[in-house]
Image (cartoon, rainbow, N blue to C red; front, side, top):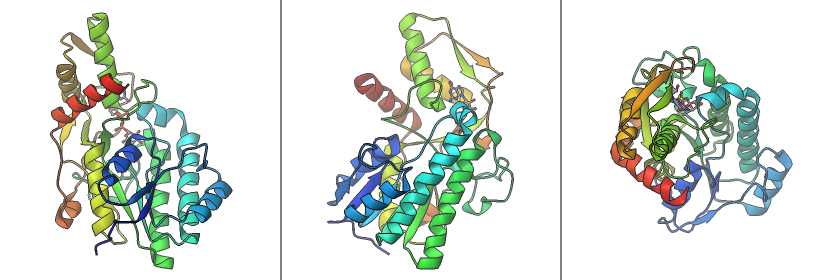
Length: 310
Ligand code: GFB
């Protein structure tokens, strides 16, 4: 299938987030009209507000990038926020989109939907074959419910809606608050501030042994636009980079980019989370997309952006 985006009115839900912002940038060159609405215009947790706004706006397509997201500590500390808010956002938007007859919708999940000990690289078929990683099971359950709801609308109502499951993301517009952020922005900030202050050590969480796969949000946005245009199917699609590093390697690369050359110490009282989550993105590659930037280059671009724009 080819869904022509030209002239389409596309709502990017969550445009103030890192992923939504990247999708808005990417759609800028597609000849479509991008619609955005801040929380002051429509509160996505409020069913009636979403319903009324959707009925009045009637987008042709939606990229559902709105979500309550955060790093390992935030996920483990605020289970209600991660489960409740994400369930409400996705249920409200999907149901209102059905009632407004939205023709295309792309829902975004996360690689943490897969079992903690899934075979690696993780195939789409691993979903629901084992127990989840406890630090983020609340978020994972919400995202699994979201992708199942997309499948349910597809199955029961023939909706041409799809889901993509990205790996760990980074890039411009990320959260740099150390209590809630993911590892990559946290370490950029920690090393940058240590360098500025002349500190002799930086404390990094966990053992440094977990493996993570990282993808730049602008590469993700490119893949999402590709899927919106070219993929129509009931199965969700993994979107990874194939670029896997240990947290120790990541920390060393970030220290190098920032120019911090003092000691790293490991706080093993902090959780490691899942030991490894490398996605198998061969289905995406077979569809025709494989366009990932080098990790160190992406980190350097992200660092420069943060210094320039905060
Ligand atoms: O990025 P992160 O918070 O998310 O942590 P997850 C990745 C790894 O980096 C963990 C370690 O092993 C952390 O212990 N780490 C080291 C740090 N130093 C730091 C630090 O200063 N801050 C943070 N945040 N981590 C999240 C899930 O898991 O991944 C979400 O909780 C979501 O649900 C997201 O799926 C993509 O990869 O462990």
